Amino acid sequence: MFDNVTTQSSLFGLGPTTFDQRFSNMERVRLDREAWLDYAPLWLEGDESLFSALVERAEWTQPVVKMYEREVLTPRLVARIDSTIHPVIDPIVATLSARYGKRLDQVSAGWYRDGNDSEAFHGDRIARERDEAIVATVSLGGPRRFLMRPKSGGASLTFSLGHGDLVVMGGSCQRTWEHSVPKARSTAEPRIALMFRHAYD
Image (cartoon, rainbow, N blue to C red; front, side, top):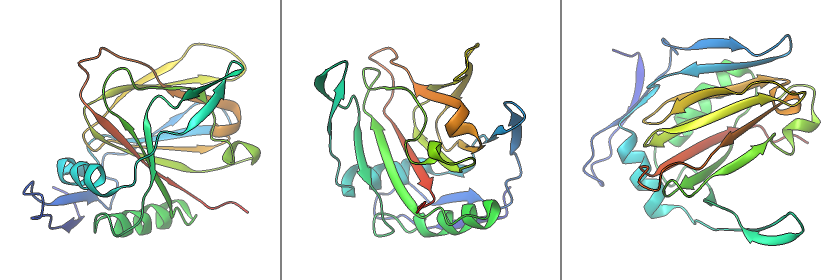
């Protein structure tokens, strides 16, 4: 179906992980004159293998953050990711970097263990300081709602992301829009957001 990259993952017994190098199903959503979002459903196949590798091999942490003048645990687990975790990481970095003209080799992940884990509305801290920035996210595992809203006010856009869906936020998106993963039912399947960013100076 795809002109794709395939990596064997027999270690986890969950079949090969592949992704669509041609971005065949990608659509661009114009959020406004400066901000846009690219959406490619099921861009990556065999996400179970990559999900399992991340769970087992990444060094997950739960940082303490300040919220409303008190310190609380981040409501999800986070980790920095490198190519030793799964052989598909480097090919994804190369493919996304070639398409968007930025080296997207700063890879991290957020693990939403159940519906109680979440992320509040925000723009990426470093990227929002720039006129334009690229942030790509591959969703692994069960679907969760992904919301976007303009910082100037207005209705939210809702996407359901999981099982290999790719979303790329670009243009002024981090500066003029906010995104979130709200809480869901506690029975929600686990989801990992695998994120690719540029190392801005």
